[in-house]
Image 1 (cartoon, rainbow, N blue to C red):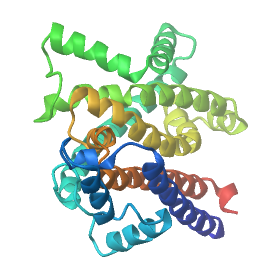
Image 2: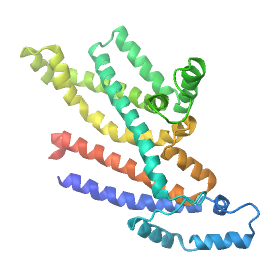
Image 3: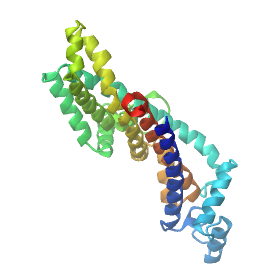
Image 4: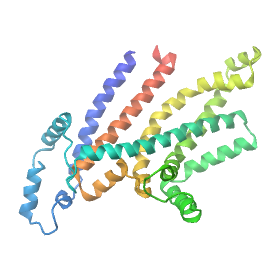
Length: 304
């Protein structure tokens, strides 16, 4: 338990430092923030007055402390582009990203683990070769290129799914598959490797000698011991999905956190960029913490 507490405290410290780094990086990235709100005809005096009104003339540390204070009080600020409340935008965008990310995670482990188990169970057969080859291809193809391919094939050529937007299950299929593709491939390879490694252990020979069926040995005992690296992989998959979501949501026009964050960066909309960037940092960090704690709890040797 002390190990878990230490990791939680280190995570909180990491969140604090990461939030400060992101906050400072946004303000030091350059560009004219006034372009998001003021017209091109605005004078230099007007732009300087606007920077003063939103607090950009203060030291970065002072701005950071003021921003955290407002966040604690529930004031997330307004977008510079259209003056919309970020709290209102966050509800919609986070919901859409959770739908897409959740569907991708379900596909990653719902498809990856069974295929990895099947490849290990049918080792050195045509089925194992086919699954392993598909996994290698899934890892090799960049997700943005895969997105263009599936849009061309399933939308433009076959007309099975809409190419972009959000509005129902059909709109979710293509972006979820693209977002999950590399994760599925990695999960297949890791599951297969872990299963084959555990099959050669002494406890498997003992179970077989005791008369247990092959299916019971594989699905109850070998799989359970093979889940430890997969649990640790889960935290990395969360971070990977969040990173790829920026590209996938932009390509497919999915109205989620990734899309609004990319648009905010292009428009120099500081309040949008800083809130959703910090949100992604928090999610990735907490995902890694959950995987670390889960790995510790699942492995008796680490608990001791």
